[in-house]
Amino acid sequence: MSVKGTFPELAPLVEKLRGRPRFLVFTGAGISTGSGIPDFRGPQGIWKKWTPVYYQEFLSSREARIRHWQYKLEGWEGFRDAKPNAAHRALSRLDRRGRLDTVVTQNIDGLHQLAGHPPGRVIELHGTNRMVECTGCGARQDPDPVYSEFARTGDPPRCSCGGFLKPATVSFGQAMPRDKLASAFEAAARAQVVCSIGSTLEVEPAASVPRAAHQGGAFYAIINRGATAHDRIADLKVEADVNRVLPVLERRLSSRRRGG
Image (cartoon, rainbow, N blue to C red; front, side):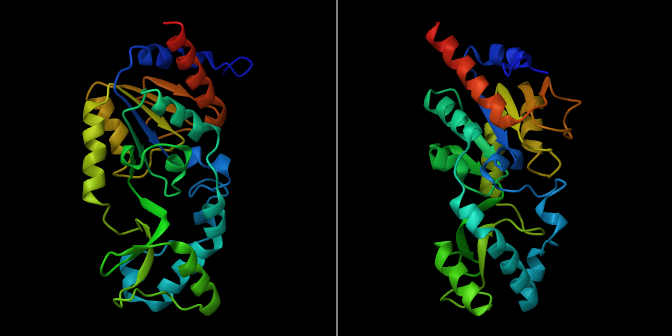
């Protein structure tokens, strides 16, 4: 473990990043828990309380649509009001210094963009909770009025075209957007260093992105509190709070830059 929060075990990753290689960052729920957003599969995870509604069930059952919106409504204010934490901000500073190639995220909270990453450099594999989308025509709109209307009426909302409105996230049983997944694997193919942050790496096909980068020759680091599905193949594992580790990584890379 680290000494006085300096995390000496980061040294191999810092050394690999010294020459400004193409650096891919892959993030999961663990990077956002420090912003007050609960994870899904942990001991206090969301799925301990709610049973997920599958996409086909959402389309075919009014009762399922109500359950899905009730679940989303319960956590909406927390998502809406969440702010980027120290880990998000550290990655954003690295990005602004030209240290990152791409951020691929499983998260739906939009906190990477709020921290300052250009939207075009963040690939959201599982969609975003910050928009509502029509399952019919695909039109998107601001969530707040939709949530307010559902809270008032209890009726699952519909688009003006008649289609069902749904938070613009990928539900169980719903196909992941092919363009997003293709872009993620393109970033993996060009990566020379990949770091998975705050993910148990259990959800596929998302978890295949950092694995593909590693199989293509990239140095693979994992920063996560707790075991992951890729621990045995990683070149480096740092088991600690990402909100403590990433600011240290960013400072060490910054000091190396100033020192030449």
